[in-house]
Amino acid sequence: MKYRTLPRTDLQLSAIGFGCWAIGGKWWGDDVDDARSIAAIHAALDHGINWFDTAPLYGHGHAEELLAKALGSRRHDVIIASKVGVRWRHQINDHAFSDLSPDHIVEDCECILRRLRLDTIPLLQVHWPCECDTPLEATLEALMALRDGGKIRHFGLCNYASRPLQQALTYAPELASLQTPYSMLRREFEFALRDVVAPEAEQSVGMLAYETLCRGMLTGKFGAAPRFPSTDLRHNDERFREPLWSRAQGLVSALRVVGAKLNVPPAALAVAWVLRQPGVSVAIVGAKRAEQVADHVRALELLGREKIWTALQPHIDATRV
Image (cartoon, rainbow, N blue to C red):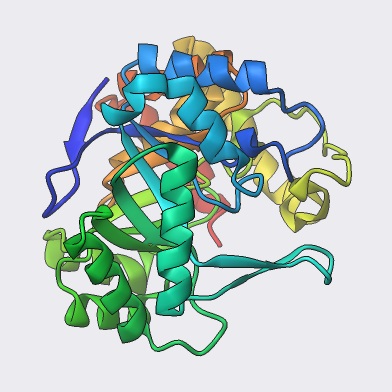
Protein backbone atom coordinates (compact mmCIF):
# COMPACT_ATOMS: atom_id res chain seq x y z
CA MET A 1 0.00 0.00 0.00
CA LYS A 2 1.05 3.59 -0.61
CA TYR A 3 0.21 6.36 1.84
CA ARG A 4 -0.40 10.06 1.34
CA THR A 5 -0.58 12.78 3.97
CA LEU A 6 -3.71 14.88 3.71
CA PRO A 7 -2.45 18.44 3.15
CA ARG A 8 -2.15 20.59 6.29
CA THR A 9 -3.18 17.72 8.59
CA ASP A 10 -1.53 14.89 10.48
CA LEU A 11 -3.70 12.30 8.69
CA GLN A 12 -1.62 9.82 6.69
CA LEU A 13 -4.12 7.99 4.53
CA SER A 14 -3.75 4.94 2.35
CA ALA A 15 -4.00 6.03 -1.28
CA ILE A 16 -7.18 3.97 -1.51
CA GLY A 17 -9.90 4.29 1.12
CA PHE A 18 -12.76 1.88 1.72
CA GLY A 19 -16.17 3.35 0.85
CA CYS A 20 -18.91 2.07 3.15
CA TRP A 21 -22.09 3.17 1.39
CA ALA A 22 -22.88 -0.23 -0.12
CA ILE A 23 -22.34 -2.17 3.12
CA GLY A 24 -25.05 -0.08 4.76
CA GLY A 25 -27.46 -2.57 3.19
CA LYS A 26 -29.80 0.03 1.70
CA TRP A 27 -29.99 1.45 -1.86
CA TRP A 28 -27.43 -1.00 -3.29
CA GLY A 29 -29.59 -3.98 -4.19
CA ASP A 30 -30.59 -7.21 -2.53
CA ASP A 31 -27.18 -8.91 -2.44
CA VAL A 32 -25.66 -6.96 0.48
CA ASP A 33 -24.71 -9.38 3.23
CA ASP A 34 -23.22 -8.38 6.58
CA ALA A 35 -20.89 -11.37 6.77
CA ARG A 36 -19.45 -10.64 3.31
CA SER A 37 -19.21 -6.95 4.18
CA ILE A 38 -17.20 -7.75 7.31
CA ALA A 39 -14.92 -9.98 5.23
CA ALA A 40 -14.41 -7.06 2.81
CA ILE A 41 -13.43 -4.76 5.69
CA HIS A 42 -10.97 -7.36 6.97
CA ALA A 43 -9.54 -7.72 3.45
CA ALA A 44 -9.07 -3.96 3.29
CA LEU A 45 -7.07 -4.05 6.52
CA ASP A 46 -4.99 -6.96 5.21
CA HIS A 47 -4.15 -4.94 2.07
CA GLY A 48 -2.99 -1.97 4.13
CA ILE A 49 -6.07 0.24 3.72
CA ASN A 50 -6.13 2.38 6.84
CA TRP A 51 -9.15 4.61 6.39
CA PHE A 52 -12.86 4.13 5.91
CA ASP A 53 -15.41 6.57 4.55
CA THR A 54 -18.90 6.27 6.00
CA ALA A 55 -21.96 8.33 6.93
CA PRO A 56 -25.21 8.11 8.90
CA LEU A 57 -27.03 8.06 5.55
CA TYR A 58 -25.47 4.70 4.68
CA GLY A 59 -28.12 2.26 5.80
CA HIS A 60 -29.47 4.74 8.37
CA GLY A 61 -26.41 4.21 10.54
CA HIS A 62 -25.95 0.50 9.84
CA ALA A 63 -22.70 1.01 7.94
CA GLU A 64 -21.17 2.77 10.94
CA GLU A 65 -22.34 0.09 13.35
CA LEU A 66 -21.12 -2.70 11.09
CA LEU A 67 -17.78 -0.96 10.60
CA ALA A 68 -17.28 -0.66 14.36
CA LYS A 69 -18.15 -4.36 14.77
CA ALA A 70 -15.78 -5.47 12.00
CA LEU A 71 -12.88 -3.34 13.20
CA GLY A 72 -13.25 -4.15 16.88
CA SER A 73 -10.41 -2.59 18.86
CA ARG A 74 -8.67 -1.70 15.60
CA ARG A 75 -11.15 1.14 15.14
CA HIS A 76 -8.78 3.17 17.32
CA ASP A 77 -5.84 2.46 14.97
CA VAL A 78 -7.45 3.40 11.66
CA ILE A 79 -8.84 6.68 10.35
CA ILE A 80 -12.61 6.85 10.06
CA ALA A 81 -14.16 9.68 8.07
CA SER A 82 -17.87 10.21 8.59
CA LYS A 83 -20.36 12.87 7.55
CA VAL A 84 -22.85 15.09 9.27
CA GLY A 85 -26.07 16.94 8.51
CA VAL A 86 -28.57 14.51 6.98
CA ARG A 87 -32.12 14.27 8.28
CA TRP A 88 -35.00 12.12 7.02
CA ARG A 89 -38.59 13.04 6.36
CA HIS A 90 -39.96 9.59 7.09
CA GLN A 91 -43.48 10.63 6.18
CA ILE A 92 -42.37 11.61 2.65
CA ASN A 93 -40.98 8.42 1.18
CA ASP A 94 -37.98 8.40 3.52
CA HIS A 95 -36.65 11.56 1.84
CA ALA A 96 -33.25 12.79 3.02
CA PHE A 97 -32.35 16.47 3.29
CA SER A 98 -29.45 18.49 4.68
CA ASP A 99 -29.86 20.34 7.97
CA LEU A 100 -26.63 22.09 8.92
CA SER A 101 -27.92 24.01 11.91
CA PRO A 102 -25.37 23.97 14.77
CA ASP A 103 -27.72 22.02 17.04
CA HIS A 104 -28.25 19.27 14.50
CA ILE A 105 -24.54 19.05 13.70
CA VAL A 106 -23.74 18.51 17.37
CA GLU A 107 -26.56 15.98 17.79
CA ASP A 108 -25.56 14.11 14.64
CA CYS A 109 -21.91 14.00 15.72
CA GLU A 110 -22.83 12.51 19.09
CA CYS A 111 -24.89 9.80 17.36
CA ILE A 112 -21.99 8.96 15.05
CA LEU A 113 -19.61 8.67 17.99
CA ARG A 114 -22.00 6.22 19.68
CA ARG A 115 -22.40 4.07 16.58
CA LEU A 116 -18.65 3.98 15.90
CA ARG A 117 -17.86 3.51 19.60
CA LEU A 118 -15.28 6.28 19.46
CA ASP A 119 -14.47 9.29 21.60
CA THR A 120 -13.16 11.32 18.66
CA ILE A 121 -13.89 11.22 14.92
CA PRO A 122 -10.66 11.69 12.91
CA LEU A 123 -12.43 13.48 10.03
CA LEU A 124 -16.00 14.78 10.03
CA GLN A 125 -17.38 16.17 6.80
CA VAL A 126 -20.55 18.04 5.88
CA HIS A 127 -22.42 15.56 3.68
CA TRP A 128 -23.88 18.10 1.26
CA PRO A 129 -24.82 21.79 1.22
CA CYS A 130 -27.55 23.01 3.53
CA GLU A 131 -31.20 22.97 2.45
CA CYS A 132 -32.45 24.82 5.54
CA ASP A 133 -30.90 28.28 5.09
CA THR A 134 -28.23 27.94 7.78
CA PRO A 135 -25.34 30.30 6.91
CA LEU A 136 -22.16 28.45 6.01
CA GLU A 137 -20.28 30.40 8.68
CA ALA A 138 -22.61 29.06 11.40
CA THR A 139 -22.00 25.50 10.21
CA LEU A 140 -18.25 26.02 10.24
CA GLU A 141 -18.42 27.53 13.73
CA ALA A 142 -20.17 24.39 14.97
CA LEU A 143 -17.50 22.18 13.41
CA MET A 144 -14.72 24.26 14.93
CA ALA A 145 -16.40 23.99 18.32
CA LEU A 146 -16.57 20.20 17.97
CA ARG A 147 -12.87 20.17 17.12
CA ASP A 148 -11.97 22.43 20.02
CA GLY A 149 -14.01 20.20 22.32
CA GLY A 150 -12.14 17.08 21.22
CA LYS A 151 -15.10 15.44 19.49
CA ILE A 152 -13.40 15.59 16.07
CA ARG A 153 -9.82 16.10 14.90
CA HIS A 154 -10.41 17.60 11.47
CA PHE A 155 -13.39 18.74 9.40
CA GLY A 156 -14.22 19.04 5.73
CA LEU A 157 -16.96 19.40 3.13
CA CYS A 158 -18.56 17.04 0.60
CA ASN A 159 -20.32 17.86 -2.64
CA TYR A 160 -19.59 21.59 -2.56
CA ALA A 161 -18.97 23.75 -5.61
CA SER A 162 -16.00 26.04 -6.06
CA ARG A 163 -17.53 29.28 -4.79
CA PRO A 164 -18.82 28.02 -1.41
CA LEU A 165 -15.62 26.01 -0.97
CA GLN A 166 -13.60 29.19 -1.40
CA GLN A 167 -15.94 30.94 1.03
CA ALA A 168 -15.40 28.17 3.57
CA LEU A 169 -11.62 28.31 3.20
CA THR A 170 -11.66 32.06 3.70
CA TYR A 171 -13.65 31.73 6.92
CA ALA A 172 -11.96 28.53 8.17
CA PRO A 173 -8.50 28.14 6.57
CA GLU A 174 -7.95 24.97 8.61
CA LEU A 175 -10.65 23.18 6.59
CA ALA A 176 -9.02 19.82 5.87
CA SER A 177 -10.79 18.30 2.91
CA LEU A 178 -13.26 18.32 0.07
CA GLN A 179 -14.91 15.06 -0.94
CA THR A 180 -16.21 15.20 -4.50
CA PRO A 181 -17.01 12.79 -7.36
CA TYR A 182 -14.29 12.18 -9.93
CA SER A 183 -13.75 9.41 -12.45
CA MET A 184 -12.85 8.82 -16.08
CA LEU A 185 -16.54 9.43 -16.82
CA ARG A 186 -17.30 12.22 -14.38
CA ARG A 187 -14.84 15.08 -14.62
CA GLU A 188 -16.49 18.26 -13.33
CA PHE A 189 -13.67 18.51 -10.78
CA GLU A 190 -11.26 19.52 -13.53
CA PHE A 191 -12.73 22.99 -13.94
CA ALA A 192 -13.19 25.72 -11.30
CA LEU A 193 -13.22 23.30 -8.39
CA ARG A 194 -9.67 22.09 -8.95
CA ASP A 195 -8.51 25.70 -9.15
CA VAL A 196 -9.67 26.15 -5.55
CA VAL A 197 -8.43 22.78 -4.29
CA ALA A 198 -4.97 23.11 -5.86
CA PRO A 199 -4.37 26.68 -7.04
CA GLU A 200 -1.24 26.95 -9.21
CA ALA A 201 -0.35 23.34 -8.32
CA GLU A 202 -0.08 24.13 -4.59
CA GLN A 203 -2.53 22.00 -2.62
CA SER A 204 -4.73 24.19 -0.43
CA VAL A 205 -7.11 21.47 0.73
CA GLY A 206 -7.12 17.67 0.61
CA MET A 207 -9.30 16.12 -2.09
CA LEU A 208 -11.02 12.79 -1.47
CA ALA A 209 -12.33 11.46 -4.79
CA TYR A 210 -15.45 9.32 -4.65
CA GLU A 211 -17.49 7.44 -7.24
CA THR A 212 -14.18 6.56 -8.86
CA LEU A 213 -15.72 3.51 -10.59
CA CYS A 214 -18.88 5.35 -11.67
CA ARG A 215 -21.06 3.10 -9.49
CA GLY A 216 -19.49 -0.05 -10.94
CA MET A 217 -19.68 0.86 -14.63
CA LEU A 218 -15.88 1.10 -14.92
CA THR A 219 -15.33 -2.37 -13.47
CA GLY A 220 -16.21 -3.79 -16.90
CA LYS A 221 -18.41 -6.44 -15.31
CA PHE A 222 -21.55 -5.49 -17.23
CA GLY A 223 -21.65 -6.99 -20.71
CA ALA A 224 -24.89 -5.22 -21.56
CA ALA A 225 -26.93 -2.46 -19.97
CA PRO A 226 -27.80 -3.98 -16.57
CA ARG A 227 -31.26 -4.09 -15.06
CA PHE A 228 -31.15 -3.32 -11.35
CA PRO A 229 -33.90 -4.02 -8.81
CA SER A 230 -35.83 -1.06 -7.42
CA THR A 231 -33.85 -1.49 -4.19
CA ASP A 232 -30.68 -0.42 -6.04
CA LEU A 233 -30.18 3.31 -6.60
CA ARG A 234 -28.72 2.51 -10.04
CA HIS A 235 -32.24 1.49 -11.08
CA ASN A 236 -32.89 5.20 -11.68
CA ASP A 237 -29.37 6.26 -12.70
CA GLU A 238 -29.50 7.65 -16.24
CA ARG A 239 -25.88 6.62 -16.83
CA PHE A 240 -27.05 3.00 -16.99
CA ARG A 241 -29.60 3.86 -19.68
CA GLU A 242 -29.38 4.97 -23.27
CA PRO A 243 -27.88 7.10 -24.68
CA LEU A 244 -25.33 7.53 -21.86
CA TRP A 245 -24.75 3.79 -21.51
CA SER A 246 -23.56 3.35 -25.09
CA ARG A 247 -21.50 6.52 -24.95
CA ALA A 248 -19.36 5.01 -22.16
CA GLN A 249 -18.87 1.58 -23.69
CA GLY A 250 -15.91 2.48 -25.89
CA LEU A 251 -13.93 3.43 -22.80
CA VAL A 252 -15.11 0.36 -20.87
CA SER A 253 -14.06 -1.88 -23.77
CA ALA A 254 -10.63 -0.22 -23.85
CA LEU A 255 -10.24 -0.84 -20.12
CA ARG A 256 -11.06 -4.52 -20.66
CA VAL A 257 -8.54 -4.83 -23.51
CA VAL A 258 -5.70 -3.03 -21.73
CA GLY A 259 -6.49 -4.82 -18.48
CA ALA A 260 -6.33 -8.21 -20.19
CA LYS A 261 -2.91 -7.37 -21.67
CA LEU A 262 -1.60 -6.32 -18.26
CA ASN A 263 -3.43 -9.05 -16.33
CA VAL A 264 -5.15 -6.46 -14.14
CA PRO A 265 -8.89 -5.83 -13.70
CA PRO A 266 -10.44 -2.79 -15.41
CA ALA A 267 -11.33 -1.41 -11.98
CA ALA A 268 -7.64 -1.11 -11.11
CA LEU A 269 -7.02 0.99 -14.21
CA ALA A 270 -9.94 3.29 -13.40
CA VAL A 271 -8.80 3.85 -9.82
CA ALA A 272 -5.17 4.36 -10.83
CA TRP A 273 -6.19 7.04 -13.34
CA VAL A 274 -7.93 9.01 -10.58
CA LEU A 275 -4.94 8.71 -8.25
CA ARG A 276 -2.66 10.15 -10.94
CA GLN A 277 -4.68 13.31 -11.49
CA PRO A 278 -3.55 16.76 -10.26
CA GLY A 279 -5.32 17.89 -7.13
CA VAL A 280 -6.36 14.40 -6.00
CA SER A 281 -5.14 13.32 -2.57
CA VAL A 282 -6.73 9.89 -2.25
CA ALA A 283 -9.47 7.76 -3.84
CA ILE A 284 -12.51 6.21 -2.18
CA VAL A 285 -13.64 2.91 -3.65
CA GLY A 286 -16.70 1.08 -2.37
CA ALA A 287 -16.86 -2.69 -1.98
CA LYS A 288 -19.33 -5.36 -0.95
CA ARG A 289 -16.92 -8.31 -1.07
CA ALA A 290 -13.30 -9.10 -0.31
CA GLU A 291 -12.42 -9.96 -3.91
CA GLN A 292 -13.48 -6.49 -5.00
CA VAL A 293 -11.00 -4.98 -2.55
CA ALA A 294 -8.25 -7.16 -4.02
CA ASP A 295 -9.09 -5.81 -7.50
CA HIS A 296 -9.03 -2.19 -6.35
CA VAL A 297 -5.63 -2.23 -4.66
CA ARG A 298 -3.97 -3.46 -7.84
CA ALA A 299 -4.29 0.16 -9.00
CA LEU A 300 -1.11 0.89 -7.10
CA GLU A 301 0.88 -1.26 -9.55
CA LEU A 302 -0.05 1.04 -12.42
CA LEU A 303 0.60 4.59 -11.28
CA GLY A 304 3.94 5.07 -13.04
CA ARG A 305 3.20 3.11 -16.19
CA GLU A 306 3.09 6.02 -18.63
CA LYS A 307 2.51 3.94 -21.79
CA ILE A 308 -0.77 2.68 -20.33
CA TRP A 309 -2.18 6.16 -19.97
CA THR A 310 -1.01 7.27 -23.38
CA ALA A 311 -2.92 4.36 -24.91
CA LEU A 312 -6.08 5.02 -22.89
CA GLN A 313 -6.20 8.81 -23.16
CA PRO A 314 -8.06 9.03 -26.50
CA HIS A 315 -10.81 6.74 -25.12
CA ILE A 316 -11.03 8.80 -21.93
CA ASP A 317 -11.24 12.06 -23.85
CA ALA A 318 -13.96 10.68 -26.11
CA THR A 319 -16.32 10.28 -23.13
CA ARG A 320 -15.58 13.59 -21.47
CA VAL A 321 -18.66 15.51 -20.35
